[in-house]
Image 1 (cartoon, rainbow, N blue to C red):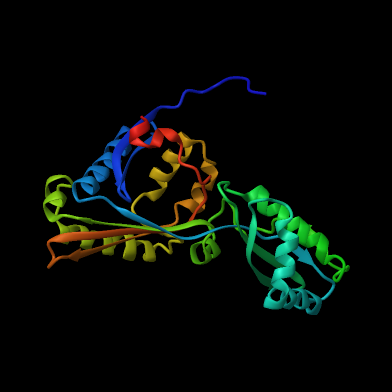
Image 2 (cartoon, rainbow, N blue to C red; image 1 turned 90 degrees about the vertical axis):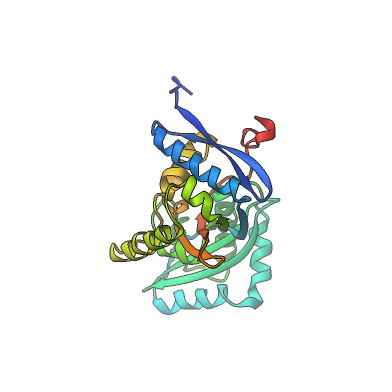
Length: 286
């Protein structure tokens, strides 16, 4: 029941040369300098031959919380769920909810007599939280036969963890876990980025790594990944609230080729996104 529409300013950065293909990157923001800065980075990457990205892991999570009368009973369910001999049966039950959702793993954590069950599943082209929630409900219904004393408190117990900064996503991953790298030529660093390889490597170490450690950062070992992620999310219709964990990122820089060039990488373990590139992202379609 829409009651109106709000115009959102959208800029374009790029072209970004990624895995041999050019992309124009839409960014919804009133911060013109952000688009310009991103565009400058795209230019440096393009002039140096492009970037390479690798999908390390792809799995959405949901973690219900259940309660028993004793910690012993909670532990019995934990052992049952994490027993490899039971996985195939649980996967069949879980997978009934979708043609695309496929159970990958179940990891459990206990807090007294409360048990948190972290299900991970592949979700096809969908971001998949509704899909995994339905599969989880199937498994919970199935478990009631052997664990009738199990009290389901919530389909999500925040051990997932969605839209909140959490170490579990930084360590285990959620959604798409990716790493992207590029080698920026020394001449490009000087002419486009207006600095030197040595200065960037030192700044990255003292700011993104050491400074973030001093601040007790959780997944924030970068300059401003959140700015770019959020601008792209709004422009492409993603859920901007998931910027929280999707911006978890560690930036690494190293001088290579006898110190002449810059190797730079970003590792992002929990990018939560619908797995389809809108047609306007491709330069050939713009």
